[in-house]
Length: 130
Ligand code: C2G
Image (cartoon, rainbow, N blue to C red; front, top):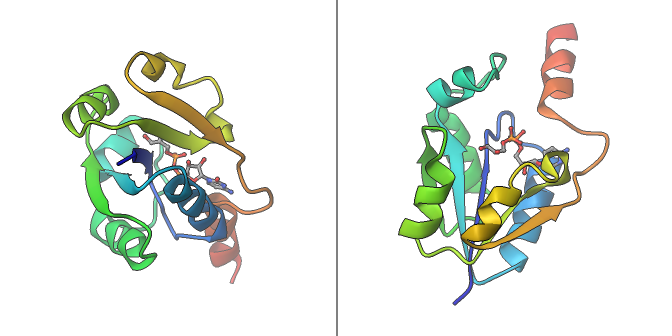
């Protein structure tokens, strides 16, 4: 069984996120999605997140694409998760190209093309203008 892992905030879930999860799932047999804890997002400079962790987890669950959902709470957790969960493939969007190459020591790393023209920031801006 090929195990795939991917991570993200998944704020105001949109087509770009869903396309990413669909392609991540298609890379293997079992998809683990790491949803970032509110505190971890703040720590990494994401201060505009609209939905609390529980709502973002629920939105990922509702896609029906994740076989397992975990919470990402600290820098360096990816290595621990990959080892602990016996992951074969780590994947993330191409906006992160090169950034996670250090994980190649532990599993295969695949960057999937980011969907153009949609982002949580744009959705947040549209909501503000309404
Ligand atoms: N994504 C995409 N197309 C978009 C927007 C996002 O393919 N238009 C992808 C991102 O590349 C990422 C996933 O959807 O793989 C989740 O995106 P975010 O919620 O913005 O999460 P991010 O900040 O990219 O967190 O540890 C966290 C991870 O490193 C990624």
